[in-house]
Image (cartoon, rainbow, N blue to C red):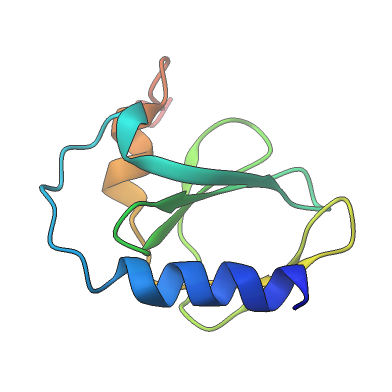
Length: 95
């Protein structure tokens, strides 16, 4: 089974679990570096959030296919900007 299929399967099955939506590092299941320098976080509930290459929370449309630095392709599921904002130590304050 390819890594892409494994990621999609994990994301899909994780969505069935009902968990609290505490936005902390313990809720991050996986983290991927994208070729453009951004980072994608996959949370335990299967939803995803993105951090841009400057370390700020970023929005990404659901369904967009992204390529990781090692060549894997992953599809955006959700747009959990607020959760990423709470994960980052130096939150972007619009400055």
